[in-house]
Length: 114
Length: 111
Image (cartoon, chains in turn orange, red):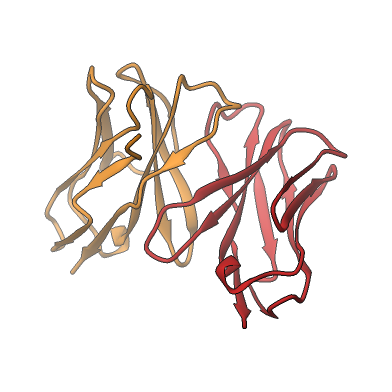
């Protein structure tokens, strides 16, 4: 069974640009969450989607947005990039979204903003 | 505000030298405490979930325990392949499925 797949693996952008990251969950998983990981702040929750609906949102500005498609694949978008957006963006999936289910993480997209 | 603090930030052990990692937390209504392992260049890998004080779980050389204020990850006779960053996270009663993570403990086991 394939794991959570994130593309691209690495991305370099300049300030002011926008970026779209993609996540394919484990087959059959319907819940997708996104986290940002930086050396200074650690892992921070961005948002969670279940059946194409956003269920939770973390404390990030509106420049960070996401969506989920009918096949459970998810994308997150960051507009007007800032230097501080440089981070590892991790996607995670779980089967039905119940809180006691394991969360499976992908290897992440490393975003560098110059 | 939910908070998770892990200590130490980094730990160096000799192969076979047992030790414990600490995770202190303050949370509104704990629904679950999670331990993950993260290797360089990879996403976190699930290890354990603990739900209530007094609960313990084991997997190979790892044992996780939970009290009302903290959790410990005990590593018995570690091997070099146990070297990784260990992350602790909590799920609060009023936060849906959001996990609040600690900063992690970077473990290095020397042969």
